[in-house]
Length: 427
Image (cartoon, rainbow, N blue to C red; front, side, top):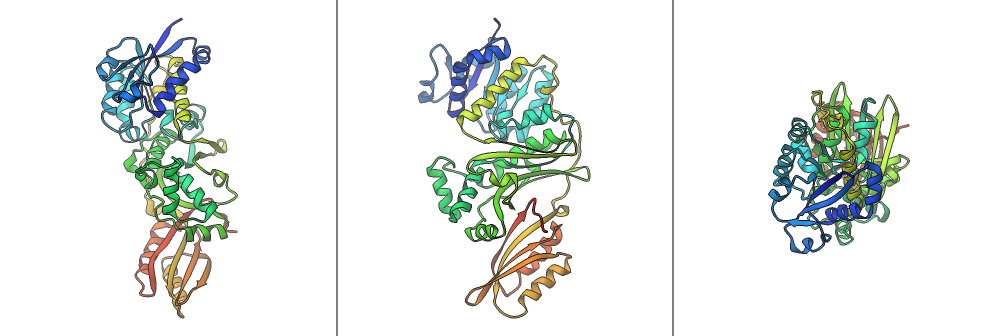
């Protein structure tokens, strides 16, 4: 039986999971591929991780040992970051080796270069594990829905923020202690910046948008906002309105151009994405061809991610040279639809001095910009009042022009809280 040697770059949580699955599922992989797929080499600098590598597998600290080994056909890069991961992937591809990676930041910034290098050298680059963990959304978009003309992607693509917002909605707790609890439980990193800022989700949306719309989208093209400004007060008001807070990645085709962003928002409690709680992820796809599809599952973790990596390994082994799925698939140049022109709905909470004429002034400023208020609730306090407003759909530029004027009013106290609303039915 033909043998296919695998080299792992990194033997941490995911890498060791891949090594374990290659051993435990060896027979299933042989049945799926007709070949003996085995772990040949591991590149690992940390001695404690080197000790975990199974007997019989060659351990090295030099990448040259990997790229120069003719018995290594597939290199699995799991070290993360931009460099040296980019150099390692490029060198592997130029040597004719296939590459499997979970490196979303690298792909969202240098995917075009890497995919072109794979194309030029007649080999493959697979990256299912780079977006939404074990959920096979990339395979579905690249293969199953290749001719479906997806028009909208809306997804919960970061497990850390989904855990935090789900916990806030369930317990009524504030953001800071909920983040601390998530760190204690292992759902958030010691430095959670990339997750809570929305950058992690933005990288994933760049990858998914590129595949779905067949036009290159990079991390720099995806504006992102984090969840640090979400308060327990707003979560409670949202709940009273039948809404659930989520950090969503939203990408859509508008007038033939792409708009891709990540932002916290409210969605109706009855929407399929509202029930995705904890560290789970889900992606909602829309097309005139199939209407709506939702893919759901664990978005992170060693074993789910390792499973996605193994799926890519099997795909590489089973794909004939010249197969189309190694290609970039970005054969269009659609351009980008400006955020200011996007029509959105908004939730607004603003604290004001409780005196006559304030509400009329605020309503007048919104009216001047053509912004229509759908509903308003006034909650009186000692000397101030909180106004909670929900708006009809409006171009974002008009809404934010009005908000800038309102924020500068002497009767306004503090910074108004603004949260977008998705899939909201105003009836």
